[in-house]
Image 1 (cartoon, rainbow over the protein chains, first blue to last red):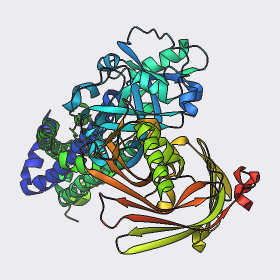
Image 2: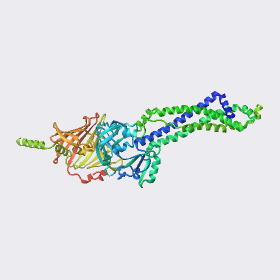
Image 3: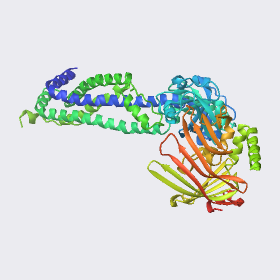
Image 4: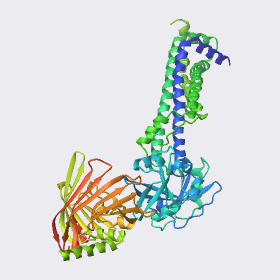
Length: 396
Length: 231
């Protein structure tokens, strides 16, 4: 306890130096908290976009369909899927089609859905901004930006053509979900129309399942143990397209970068502590001659470094969590994300991104304190351990 | 003179006896011409630029083989339309590709024409036909796969002179004009065709039919294997 008091007194003795040291740690702590919060928030927004809008929490399809998503590889009869965590299941039929208005022709993926079943699984039916959701065959609901691009309005006919057939469908609603794939590329038709467009031989291409958030991969894994041969379940994480690689790449890039930041902050703390120890070698010699062991002296040096960085950590945590709280409750990144969605409309990005706020970030940030203490023990501490008190007491 | 008057009366009576749908069918039949070979000059006009293609065409009225002669960059490209089947040979790829039926709605050589305009029977298959003010008025059948809200077909002496396509808001979006019909071997063939995109100023496609040789076309011309080497 007296060692701690002694270290604390030494930290306070050089207030300006301590303040500067702490500032470095404040900066790094805020950076660590913010970047982890941002990365986790980005990941959560992707999972939400794919689970609730673009795909589903879990999807079951034939193995051949996963390899070649041609409707011909879909289900001729729907499989029974039983798992206690599956809250809803609905068949979907996805197929590539040409969309034709009087002004433009554009290719896209059409999703045939059961209008009522979809309500239990996806948020898309609740994001209709104009008109209404599907209720019967012969109707289509489009993403709002896609409708603008094709120049089709609610009540007008849209031609959907595939290599197996063509239908003139009445646009009954436009969706504004804030997710690129839905707003820029969403085409929802009745399952029966999709079956007709695919040639009428398949009922659906896949089965979408709703499971609680966070259980997607576990349920998919469990289902794969019991599903008949030739069928495979995939969790939302596997359903993400190239954007998943972007997210994982970001983590691979930023996490080591943050580690480097923390190391540099610890080195800054330790180098200052080193200078401080060098200036106070005579003082240490006196203390050692009064009976304090060199190891306890080295511990005191480590404690000084830990206290100086600890002060910075506390302030950094305060500022960092305040920043995270603000960015997790306010749409600060909205303009940036909207721009990203415009640039990459089919990546599954959401127009809103809220940072995550988790207590564990404090633990990550605290690494800098531990690192500072460890380095202080290794370098300035060694200086104290190698101290020859008689030499310093003689004034040499 | 008296004989001509009787003939005119007989034609009028025949015309009066035809339903609007029959009139349309008969007019569409006259678009195709007899079996013939010809060179079609296709001019694609865009604001500030114009590009002309010369195409060698072989057709028996139902099937068609089109081969690009000029410009050099596209020379050798060939198209074959066999009912719902459409084939394309691209010399740059060195391969013959079969296009899906939806490919019939694609624009032909970057022009305003679609394969459907050239060979299709959409007007009689997808629309209900009535006659108003001397023109045939076509409205889509329920659920018909057409993006148009209405089509007006203007006939002159049983020949299609002008086709006006309207969007679903009542605005004319495309205009097709056909002219200089020639009677060849008992059938008729329009020698000029003009298509305007009314939503974009300066977008126009002109087709002029020249060097027509009426007569049977070798069967091999309608075999996809001959797309590459020509027939």
